[in-house]
Image 1: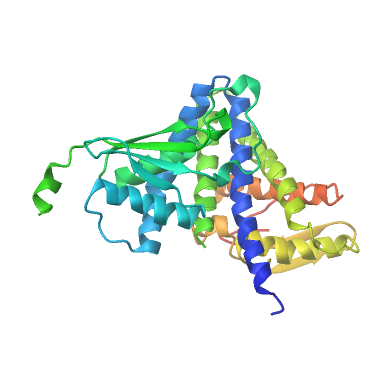
Image 2: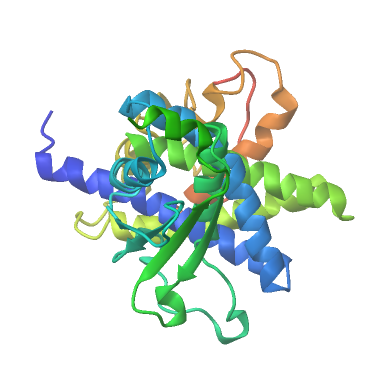
Length: 180
Length: 150
């Protein structure tokens, strides 16, 4: 084949762009269908949830990570393995609570908003990437970890970075015994 | 590649979500197929622009169709079109024997009536791509036995 390695990388980039463009078209269509931002956000979250519960199977099959022994390990795996695998970026993780069950993923570069400059004025409270929250929530639930995921900061709304907050809901009682 | 799984899942979610909304509202099935097709149109327009940024100018319609069958299809669906037929008067039939978006659904005639929904986006994708290359077209899809489609 006369394909050069540069071409392969380009193809890889284009399939990612396909996903980003499709996502953009989806959000645009939802904005046309629903008037209120909350409805659009809820719809995106629900769709993300359905995607997440299936995506986690694909993720575990491809990455073969071992069972995570703590919430912080889980957050690290999500940031360093899953995000890298599917979106090509690695957010940084920080723990934001003393109890150890609240984490933040900080994204400098969010590939989903590559083609978005700014939110339209009448859609000020739209969470453009709410799908991501749903995906993380769905995926965690399929591995028996209940969590609440939401956007704490969003670059599209003027903040400096994009920050996703994950709050694990169940208390780690069974983990205390294993941590010896 | 991992991106594939993401796109496949997003696509099936889109089809399901739009159909769910249609069932609750008063619109019929035709409306969500149209919505999917128009979404595909937008994506196709944008994608073909990014894709053909550095390629040479196309000589004629057939050249464009060959490009769609080989490079475009390979990038989007990781395989080439299996068969391209034309009557040299403006009608082209692209046949894909193992269409990616349908392989997970069934391997024969089961669920045939649901197949058109899954092809609407791709039809829009092709129409959008052709429109940005200067060709006005109508794209239709036909499925006789999954996962092959025309």
